[in-house]
Image (cartoon, rainbow, N blue to C red; front, top):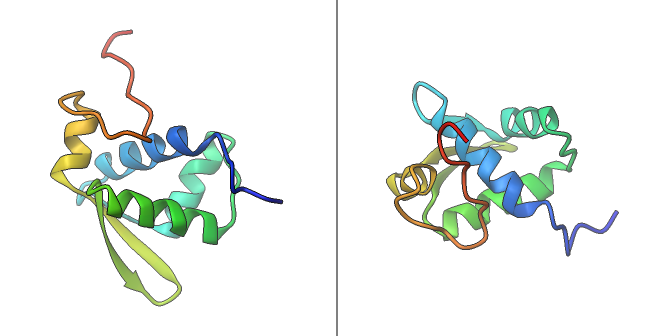
Length: 100
């Protein structure tokens, strides 16, 4: 399947940031990111997930560490600010307002 023009990307990026923010150490490896996306019906290959994590790193929303065949992502302050609605990172869906 060709994912080049995948319209689910902004939503998947938000799901990833929320998942990272929900971890005690703000980190998660790409295998768990895949499982989190599957909870929302987003079934994509590892290469796609790694590409999205790379994009989030380029935007300053996460930092990445390679660990063998997986990637460990950690949300940054900029990523957290996007989730708090303090800033907007173009290409990532905005979170819903609390209570909405």
